[in-house]
Amino acid sequence: MNKLLLAMITMIVFLLFLMVNEPRKKVYMLESGLKLTKSLRPYLCKYQHKSFLANDSWRKDDTGHGTVMAETISRYMDPDRECLVIYKMYDGKPQQKAYLDALKMVADKGDATALVVAITDVTFDTSEVELYSRISKFSEIFVSSGNERKVLRKGKCDVFPACLKLLVKSPNFKVVGANVEGYNHGPLVDENHNPKVTIKGTTHDGTSISTARAAGEYLSSL
Image 1 (cartoon, rainbow, N blue to C red):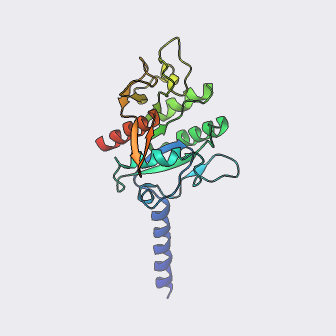
Image 2 (cartoon, one colour):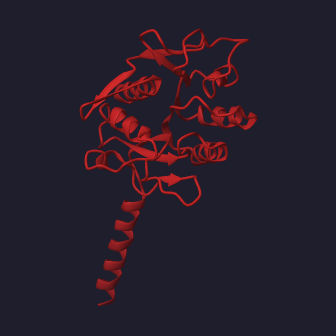
Image 3 (cartoon, helix red, strand yellow):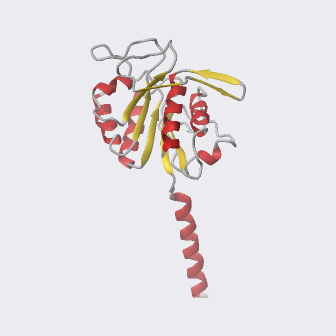
């Protein structure tokens, strides 16, 4: 009986380990949350998602942005190899403390294969440079150039986090723009991709989509 009980306990511990441990490559998304759909469920990592907003849930997508981003990038993913981690840090607009707390957690965990930050309206903070620099040592980073028709270049750059390209000295920090006119562009943009995607009959447009595509193509190349 004791041997049987020990075997059962061992099996339970092993199963719990499998549930908590996530062997797939992790893609972190700093987003507005996620509407958990049946189609996205296979692409989500286990038990690692988090909202950095008070009294909120990562499963609540306030703007729909996070869900569109996840739907876009998942088209390039193999759910047996990669999975998404959703870090919610805005509800209509980015919340600076939540954004920095989410970045710090990615940096501290050190297990990201890719980080996707498709926002362009956070306030510059010196701690961002250190955090992105840390993350770039183990992960590719994809940030959006933005949709304001601005030229991003040295001496005239006020779109963050894209303009951190001037301070984060790593080839793994990539600013992603669009392959058509009408979006932020210039010397600081590393890659240009299609800014449009149609999901369930609705077309979405912007460098956020370009950024999801860039991250997705990177994952496909691994």
